[in-house]
Amino acid sequence: MNKKAEYVVTSETTRVEEGRPDLCWMDINVGKLNRCCKVNGVYSFRCDIGGERYDFCTKACELKDAFVKKDVYKKKNKGGIAYSFYLDYRNGAIYKSKTKGLPPIITLNPVGGEKYQSGALVLSELLGQTKCLELLVELVAKTAIWAPPVCHQSLVGKGYAKYPNVRRKKNGEEKGKVPGENIRLDDNTYPNRQMKEMGKKFYGTNFKDYTTCHIWEETCYDTRYHTCFANLVLLPSALASLSDFCPEIKAILKYRSYELYGWLPEDGEIKKPRKPKYYPNCWEAVPRVASGIDDES
Image (cartoon, rainbow, N blue to C red; front, top):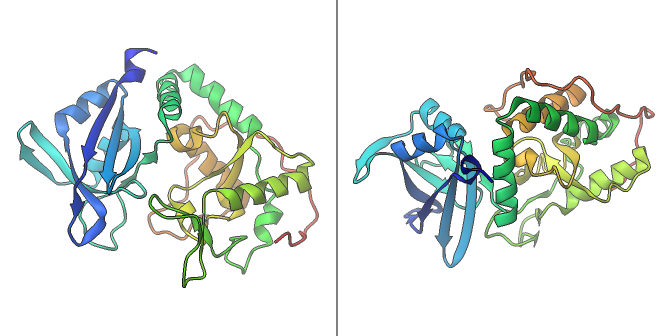
């Protein structure tokens, strides 16, 4: 691995904000972040809260862009000038302040272990090469499995979620039904099962080595969208991390989803996606199906 792919900067914290136990206050040295951007590096975050460790990361350039666009507060410290912000250690969301109700300025990617992180860093470096990006985009387009639009349309009037009371569990939460609430916390079992069942019914394939990925960031934590067909895609497990770590791949998946279903999450921050200049021309055809669909719940 070359130096660019190995350039990882880590910020650590153990401090939890009084009155907002979900948030940690953090500083990032401006010069340090700029140096990381120059080599297309990755900025990592580590929080040790109550004996539990939470790890996140993102491309340094994406982080800097978010800080600049949202005018994140800067202050003087011993190392010079630093960005000062708040991190939700449960889901990786970064906020300008600890005022409740504000949208995050950026959401970091969870790190699922050293091998997973290293693989993402290698791809991050490779994607700097135009030819490699073209190949990866084509590979995703050739192998991505989407639910036929009829699956999405069958849930019109029902909120679009196949399982409307299920969402992804956050760090620190336990899988299962929430006591006293009509909500079930999931890992990725529910959307993975529904997409595999869809694949079996419409494609006649088990898709054993495929993983279900969400299209829009953070939507897996919302019961309205965790099991929405238009928010899901099956990718070969070897490529699945691209939907989390690669902005170019995330962009083509968002546009393809909108192209197929004409649907967006109901969030004021989410706008109609623009067609990326590297958008592939050839996607695998969606199978023709009847206008109705059996209820598989």
